[in-house]
Image 1: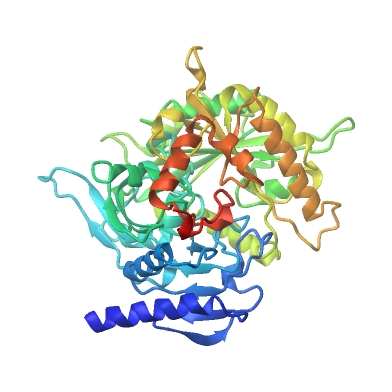
Image 2: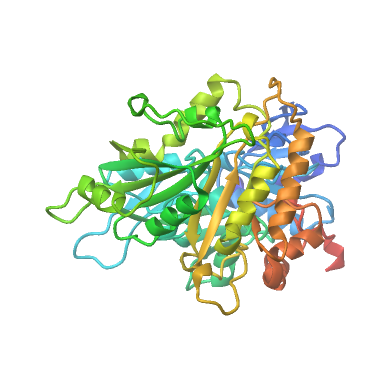
Length: 526
């Protein structure tokens, strides 16, 4: 064991020395010599966004959290003042957040990820939970937990994301109104800090680190293990969609649904700007409904809206999911005869975006630039924000879903690092509701539309700046900002706490350089 530790330390040193070379190499975990050339756009310099391409000088494929700890410990005590480190999970970032220009990228999926499931006995206190590695995918956790009839409570829409990646951002989907984001459903973490310390933390032990890394954009440490809260999984789900032609009615019904957590298990919604959006698997209606909306009017384009909600097949004795849906639907105000439902397995429901991925792949729209924009918007500003959004896109040729649905502020722990819109001062408490709006567009290079990538990014900035203005008070989710000043504005009154946590856990600014928040600090200055 001691000899293996010595070899690992030697290999880490060789890796660091290799960074001084003008050549760029992929490095293997136990042999940091040049095993093969790092191409200009290797996986380490590529992400789902396909907008930013920053090549590292080396890639570490660790076999254990200890390898990561050794690397960061060495860097914190060395004179290599420019070396930075980024942890890469599934590579689903949009703007190079998991890249490290001329630094080191850690491929988290190389660490063996044995998923341990603890199912609480009836006579036992506490919770069912899963211990899972930071580089594992959520779909892998789902598959393992379902074998015991369990599943996490809170999800993202797309399951092929890493555990550590979503916990470093927030992790939201249609269950968030009920159970909070994924970061509100974590019991314990193993984290390697920027100084190389390997720490087990929780709300009651090393709590400052625990809350810092949750939603912390990778700035304070690398999550190597998470203990995720589990609950009983329903066998089936009643999956319902309803259509609207009026925005106020649409949002009113969404807010009605999230006010009924005892009945509803999932709520999302979509803006439907064109026929292509209608035909996507996200909002498609069965042919027998004969729904053929008119998107083109003489004076302006017509826009529609779709609510998607779900009811688990877990009901009190004598009550069916169908009866619950009927009770809910009687209170809704959708377009006449434009609600339908299907029953699917719980796995298929949670994995629904995989179908959309296959659809996009078949159309050549998966491995293309994805200039996404996600915004948290207070309820009081959502209608104005919707108008700003539609003014800055071309509805006729917009490709990709536009998500819009309400979250509840009290389901988020204010101790975490996520920046939500500031709570209002005074008032009647209606700002408990915060909307998430996601423009998840694909920039198809083969499209005849006059929307080049630069223009889309420019319009995204216009939308984000308008939404962040004082009157609306929105905040970016999965944020991308051009300067430290913008980041200060993003965190607002929580900036000092965020900066203090950085100084405590990563004082040299080694971690997550792709976020562009803190500069690298030479060790000699501390």
